[in-house]
Length: 356
Image (cartoon, rainbow, N blue to C red; front, side, top):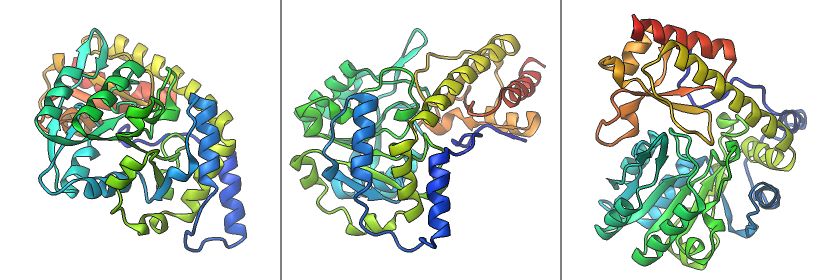
């Protein structure tokens, strides 16, 4: 079975991270996580160099990972039964996070404009008017690989300010962008007063098992909304994960740049293989991530992902998992952060099933 579903990469971990972890093990430095001031300056420098975003390092708070940060923020900012907005298709775990926080899901699905998925700002306004309390934004958007434009996000910030909506911007995939990424909190006063960013180095530097992430607030307005966040968030992160994050942001940019180039090459290889072997399939414009959103609707295969797994021996993510209404029945999410031969073999197996 070829595992093209889990969002991790078949690449070696960056040497600065390996060296930092090896040194900690050699020094028996594997105790509890304590105060960790290193992460603020490390991310501040990285964000400024990468995106021109000047942050306040004091606004960073560690968490076990991005999912835990999201759930704790939702619990702090909502009461059970409150509506939280998402944009389908979106990362499947969002729905689990909302359920854990006892929130209701509201949806403003992305619009397909040619081969580009975009935010539907009119639908977002409509949901805000209908009482949404929090907007859980995926930026860049997983699974479609879209970087939301600065103009789109500025309009979101204006709407959030108008309707007093908290925007949780999940930017974990942001370093894996080859288009111009705009951090939500870099967009000025309205964004700063409505937004909290959740992120980690774990996705971009392939260290998800080390369990560490953080949230960023840059205004007193948002901090008041999140005043009930548990102090224990800081201590529930991993000491190895925290040091891996610092090493990534301090010294991991050369590895990251090489990886982003490899991902772009792999995406073009995947596009060629799909066009050659699955001519009725559709792929879309991408600017970030290593997760391709592929439309196989034309092949009319029922229970698509499970059929691909059982008959083609390729594991992919099912399209309906990315919607609250079981939409996208003919879609799959496909991880191309692997070798070109493995990508070719996975597409070949799927094509034998679809083209028959």
